[in-house]
Amino acid sequence: MKGFLPISKIEMDKLGWEQLDIIIVSGDAYVDHPAWAAALLGKFLVAHGFKIGIIPQPRWETMEDISVLGRPRLAFAVSGGNLDSMVSHYTADKKPRRQDVYSPAGEAGKRPDRATVAYCRLIKKAFPDVPIIIGGIEASLRRLAHYDYWEDKIRPSILIASQADLLVYGMGEYLLLEIAKRLDQGSDIKTITDLRGTCYQTTALPQKYRLLPELAKIEQKKESLNILTKIVYEETNPYNAQVLAQKHKDSFVIQNPPPLPLSTAELDRIYEQDFVRKWHPSYGEKNGIPGLEPVQFSIVTHRGCFGGCSFCSLALHQGRFIQSRSSESIIKEIKSFISHDDFKGFIPDIGGPSANMYGLHGKRMEKCQVCRKQSCLCPHVCTNIETDQTKSVELWQQVRAIPGVKQVRISSGIRYDLLLKDKSDKYMEDLCRYHVGGQLKVAPEHVSLPVTSLMNKPAKQKYQEFVQLFNKVNRYLNKKQYLVPYFISAHPGCTLQNTIELAEFVRDDLRYQPEQVQNFTPTPMTISTAMYYSEIDYKTNQPIHVPKSEQERNYQRALLQYKDPKNKKLLREALEAVKRPDLIGTSPNALLHESSRKIGKKVHQKPAGKQKNTREKREKR
Image (cartoon, rainbow, N blue to C red; front, side, top):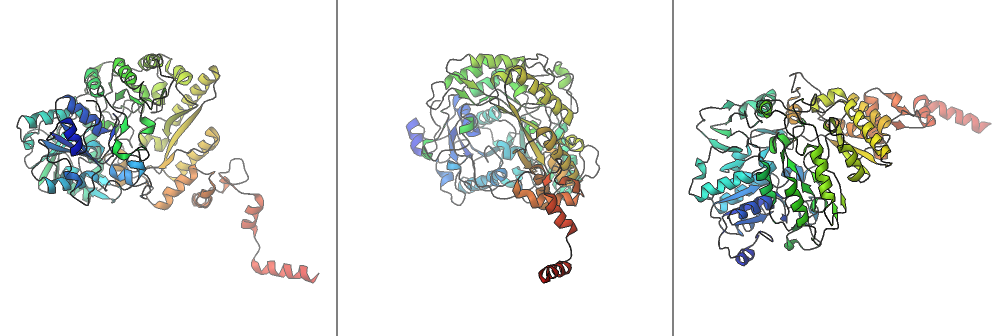
């Protein structure tokens, strides 16, 4: 389908559609681009013969918007948007965000808190008998009982809270298609309980299942969330995962095993749709969607991640197995926008969750299919993972050869521990020669071993080894290029002493203040969030320090941004709290630089009375 999907009755009439089969309700403004789930799902379903419309960001104080497209023939499909709505609204310090990049002109407040639940309540009032399917990142990561950072409490499954009929977790194109086909054939949505990648509510347990700690127990005993999270992660491998059941008062939420990885051909078919790559014209030229600009001509090459970082939810949403598109599909997509009136020859990114995982897989898949490990990279890169990254290099070569393409960047991030294992020995050279625009983003997150271990990230030595290789290659190429590292402060298990270790690394190794520093944000269903809530090490079941107070979280961030004058007071308080006066003063190693005269005044200042007597003596003379 060319053009936009309808968001009004007028646009339905132009297409000759009297009634829609499925209406997608989204917390995001409508952008016809493959990075927007509503557009990707909608056009994929239209390609299979279904009539799809979108209600973007409906007002939740009125029934008017939710009814604008009428009653759908089959179902409503509801999503909070590309981000969890609470993450969209609030910072890591629980302060309201000033901008929402997925809303017109970046205006905040265009979606409600807990958007999926709010939209479902509207639909239940307007169309009480129409089936509701929920999906997207908000529903996917709240599918079971979970800790909510913004309320500081355990919340029930979003399936219970929204009273939706079915929940699709993960990337749901083929799942939603199958549900649409069954509904079209007359199936009652309550009978659709066998699909992988779905959750449903029931009072009757299936024949085989693995029982999770129930909602009431997690509310009473914090360590139960660690147990739940551990079981969920053990059951992420679709080849050996079991059905999971969790009791919520008088009913159960059932999670079916994850969907099997898509084949290359299946993934190609999703991305072969014709996208406008613009926001809907109803937003006007000036009041566009800020989130489009950085990704308008970016390319997704694959899905999934086997990194297994404790604070990341990618494996829970996209899966542990890498699902890669063919180079032919990627080249075809690029050629489709060469003549686009906004395209200037620059492709800002070609990649996925980690750009250098494209085309990678297990050497012996039978071993991968029985594995229950959280990560294929930590504490060491698995010997069964294929680490030859030639496919990425060959893809880049083909893209650079396309007439009209002037520059291609890789900005989605790379796993440097995986890159160090590249057998082709070509990835780094081609990356630095053609695809780094002066700066390359990487994410060591931390360098203190106790913290990186809890994060399930490689130790500091791996990052240092990568830095040496990066610098060596750039010297060979006679280029001056720099790494931009990301760091997380206030992660569970991270003390002020651990943060000082990272600050000293920043001082000695980086020699500049990193801009990309963020306090840890507990998001639903991750291992790090379970540790934040329980204050227990996920691996050892031993108590850990968790920086929860606003004061300590501010201290940790200030230590990493010690050169910022605004942090001077916080920095002093933090260093005094851990008794590190050696880091205050005129020494080159000082984090807080103060003149010796100023320090002397504070340390050796005479009592006020004596100062007055001395002044009087001087006056008499």
